[in-house]
Image 1 (cartoon, one colour):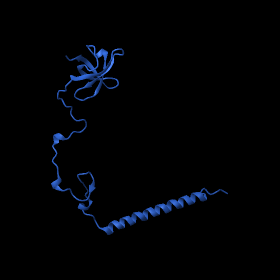
Image 2 (cartoon, helix red, strand yellow; image 1 turned 120 degrees about the horizontal axis):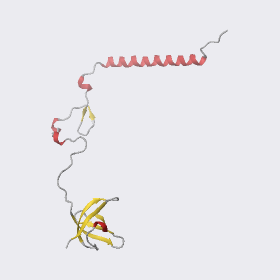
Image 3 (cartoon, one colour; image 1 turned 90 degrees about the horizontal axis):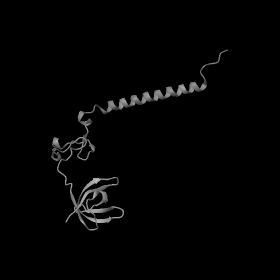
Length: 152
């Protein structure tokens, strides 16, 4: 005599699946009935608006608060580069210079930044409190003064 292919466990799982399917169908029917009872929504009820702060609201925006934006002012991505001439030669004062080690620092007169200077980038011998003109480049560890010249 052959043994039945369906075990008790398989029968129980099948019962649970049928029960879940039936409950899901009942919930779907209830939702449909609730929609029919509420009546059809108008198009105006379905609209949403975004206010000036970016929040979603159900009220339309106030036309008096409307701002006019020019198409030229809208930049998608990186804004265009400013082609205005940049002052490359700067004035400064030597804050500190070590002749033995061959480096020091210059204080920029306009920005008051301290900028590193190496002896290889100078045409003259520098000492503390000397007035100089220089150009700035990006070095390995930050801005670096190059083409340093004494001002008489």
